[in-house]
Image (cartoon, rainbow, N blue to C red):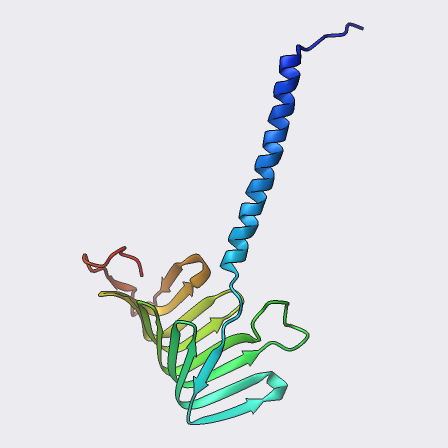
Length: 184
């Protein structure tokens, strides 16, 4: 058996490479955790006004009826009816909002910053931050640009939109040349 001696410079380089790659992995993992923590914001309050309210404890749901206005952070939701579904003590996770889902029906208008939406129904899942707008002419506007279809799904956490059509009504869009970033 022959013993091969490796020069000390190679040993130092190998150790330095291992230390640097370990340090990079730790920094990368910490940055990834910070990015995840920044995306997951703490629950925000929800204020609702209406003509009437009906609570159903068995379904963990409260329905607001008539001239309903819901405000949460920089979002405003107007509708004829809004049902708010709550997590039970068994389904709620730590740091999660008590509100599980918001379902708005009838003359729905949704505003968040520059973005506005109109539909017959809006269904918002708070955990996944997904808003689904449905109706004959569901419409999403940003600035002067707009898009319409039968179903508009807003993936808020991903800043992504999917618009679907029917056989009769295809997806329509108008992009104003003067809008800043051209996004909806």
